[in-house]
Image 1 (spheres, rainbow, N blue to C red):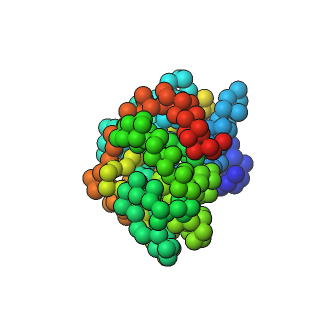
Image 2 (cartoon, helix red, strand yellow):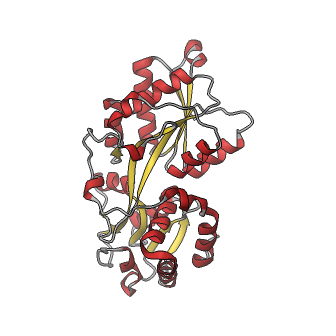
Length: 312
């Protein structure tokens, strides 16, 4: 838990924000917001799965005011349950329509990619199916879609573009080739950064782009056949006792200053008038996924994934 600002008056008006990573981004946004408004911010930062589990555990006594997730489906589910405060910021005017609703709006957008260690003995892959080749035997990791909203979005993208038979056959071939599913995104990426493995199948791109910029010997490869995006919804809970302050926070994140902070983390800004430090939507081959339909099948998809991969 990070507390920004002190003093009795600040404590009295402190806003509580639950956010999926990157932790440095939410810390900077919170600090900037406090500096600009004088409103203190308590931040809980974790994975999307842990954020949503905490919300569920606190349902009888909600503590969060604003939630930022890495899974669009999580916002859809909360809205369907009537748990979100209706608000569309004026600063969302420059956000494309498919990245906003009356109840939630994208903070930024990531995409799914292959991340390859340049120092490995394996060749640079070009597409998802390349990793079934013997050259990648026992060299591939994948985040668990039950613990990573973005990884779940990738599985739904594959189901959309390849169909059920093609998708599950691909995943079976990857497992037969020694692919492991160690857990959330960081656990899939770390072995590749350390050189123990060569490639991540379905890495969240902004994390790796930032590490590449910091000098890590990795390449972020967007497959030729297409990939999926993972918009990061930002929402205000209907239970908030501070709707005005919560709305101010959303306004700030969608301001030019806030969106430049988002860009600094190698995410695509939600606003299309803010420059990015990485490939944007127009530069990627995207798979159009019916998120509502796929989310309705979530339990069945995750069950099948566990059966196919042997990952529990």
